[in-house]
Length: 395
Ligand code: NIG
Ligand code: FE
Image 1 (cartoon, rainbow, N blue to C red):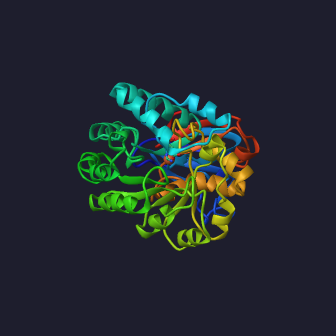
Image 2 (image 1 turned 30 degrees about the vertical axis):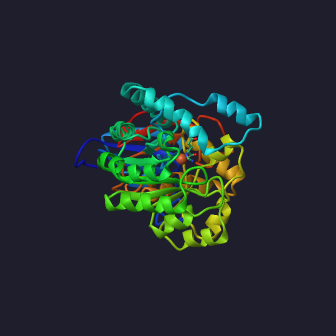
Image 3 (image 1 turned 90 degrees about the vertical axis):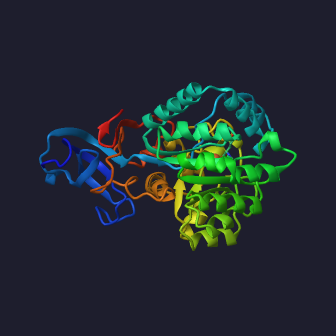
């Protein structure tokens, strides 16, 4: 196969290839091809099909009967921060409950950190995630909560990903604890102006102890007017207006979705808004699991992500989240792998990642296992053995 923009590489002898293209292979949502090959041309997938029919290329990699999946699309993380919250975790595992208030600890540490420290932390967590197969990630501000600290958090994030989210509305800044309205005015005014150039998305933690429905609507609407697209931290700790608001504003995603009424599920099912489930948070806060089965049975598009952050979910591992979702949230292994790849892409309104079809980015992970099912079947085992990002072998 001749290349248009770089060398061509074929990965042959793949026992199970997950394409996420239902028109391929077994016709399931995962578009599974057995005894498959993938051809990479430059940064893109050029061809997928049966190994015996693969075209000739410059380079050849033998998968030796292992599985290849699209790189994970982690559509929800909070990676610009300093410090950790070991003590809070310890207290929680001794019976204390999680609340939004712990965010203040990380805000203080983040404000005190230099740009270099924040960037070094971010790159360390990204390297961790890449080793575990994450090739696309979203990340947020939300631990600065001043104009300068939010803007620099986003500037640092934007140097590492296109999927950057302005979360000035994570909690009311401790500087304005007595007057939330003043803080909302800042988040929708001067802070938004300083942050919008670095961000694609705007998010609000719509929750008791954070922002109510009216405040969240005002913040997301102001962001939309500046060209940012909404996503919402919704219905994590309690029932509330977050999911309905996400649907009302055509948010790309409502994230957490742990406490949902039938009306919430119905609203999601009749919308373009993806429900992003974050089982690392329920695991690390010992909370009730979100019910993925209920959402899937209602026809809702479900994504799975890490929510990696120092408070509620300090894991960068999508495979861990896949295993939890299968064990405890009613997902099949196929559904969980789809949600962690194509589902994450849908939550970011992307079609160029999360699938292995001609034209998509050549972002893929080779597993030390014959099929993707092993991600749930062998929890905690580091099965990701090689990773290509944009056609380049990175692990
Ligand atoms: O998604 N829910 C709000 N934000 C994070 C937790 C942040 C923190 O505790 O530091 C979350 O779980
Ligand atoms: Fe979060």
